[in-house]
Length: 170
Image (cartoon, rainbow, N blue to C red; front, top):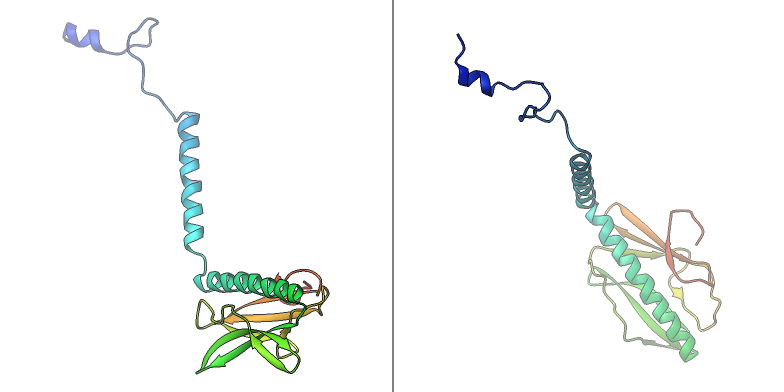
């Protein structure tokens, strides 16, 4: 026999029953929150997995591009040719900016070291990059290497130096 108090608490599906059954799923808001959290986590993971060598090389390329454009503007303002050349001092690869004064070469007060000492640079087809003073300079290309990674900076002679894909035109 069933106790009368136990019978009163047994849930029923009759209309007016004060007790509701448990929810049988997720709300749309709960699903959207979970999807947003998964998207944020995937974004963080993809940033964390980026190749640090490539990041350092990209930073060097952007920095060199800005320095080359600064030197190009200096050349146009002074009316004197400026050259950039990779150099090696005590086995460490560096670079130099110099103003050409007839037969003399005068160093410019600009950076001479890479942020990462292992970066290597090569000017394709010539020993140095000519940066003016004419507004139109020849097309030029520089290859930066760090480990097995490489980046190319190039100009068509009219536009600024920028990063280009291997074999692509600036």
